Image (cartoon, rainbow, N blue to C red; front, side, top):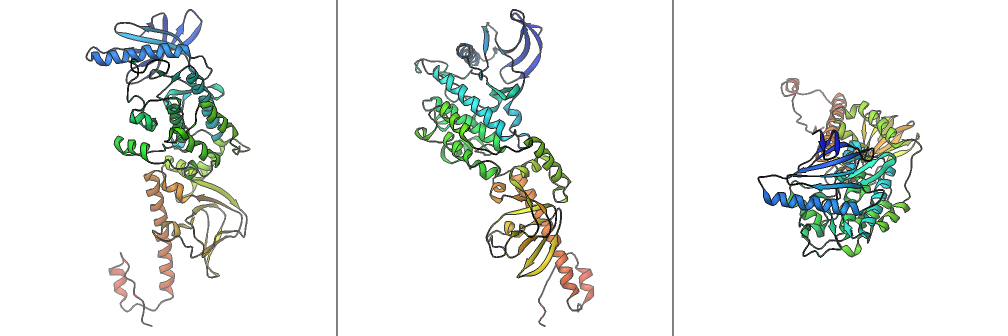
Length: 449
């Protein structure tokens, strides 16, 4: 398309199932605008009527909203075969780009962006409007992390009589971000948007949704009936205070959920979170490269390494510090990045382990017991990646399987070395040919001597 109404098309910005968005010049105001175009299909009159209603709704609702964190709408035109909406062009990115575990934004940026979204939703509700489709793709971020909520096409005008409001369509929204009351088809208020924003925040902090399932029916059941895990269970590096905020935002009981966006924003501003001296993104990249160079992680995919970063804590440990004590209970384990440790049992040295070696994996792998049967002490300053077993259990199945396989392979390798040492101290075999003939397996038997 060369032009859309008075707007000259520069290039296409994106295309969805129902609309295409173009970057255009606005000749009357000497500015660039984003123009969303919807074509009404000829084969389905009912769908065309529905799309026309939604589009008219977006134009009417959006032009009433004047807030720095809501995308402004300048013009809305509905023709017989198509319609278009001219709106503020946001030169930035959508939060959808930062939901993957390997592309997460630093924590302080996430909190700042969600804070601004809370205030925007609060302003919209004071105009009698709720969005109903808050999701990462509908939140743009401009320079300076200025959040911009877009796409009010599914917005519900609370000032209208819902019985006569044909734009009130049951079941709209994106299922993974829907509130329990939205799924059930109950009357909605501003709290449904805060729930959806809580889901977005959870995903931006952990790289996964609070509720996951292989099919929509199971997903709906979990949203309605089960509680989301704590974010610190998935990412131990997050401050504990975020658990309470997300728990309240994702409350199934409307009376216990945040009353408005300003209340949620106030709690976010009060969270005391640790800001690292250097840039978090640069540190994450350094840690990723260190894992990539570590032998233990050779077979791990890049995205799995990013998951490891989110479920682990990097510890710089001085010499002569016990990482694990015999007789204690825990499933914590980790990988030595640099340095050296000594493993002992009953006060007797068993072995020394260096870079790339896992520590504490036996208790983690044991299906029934987390009792420690050895002590691990650092012999020199050691960099140790401590992996949280509970967080790992909530991570992707791919990472869980990869980690177990890597630990089992290393454990079997050590067992084979122990067998060689034990064999060197044992008696001569009664039938030496047996070992070469059946060398592919082990058939151990205690000597009667």
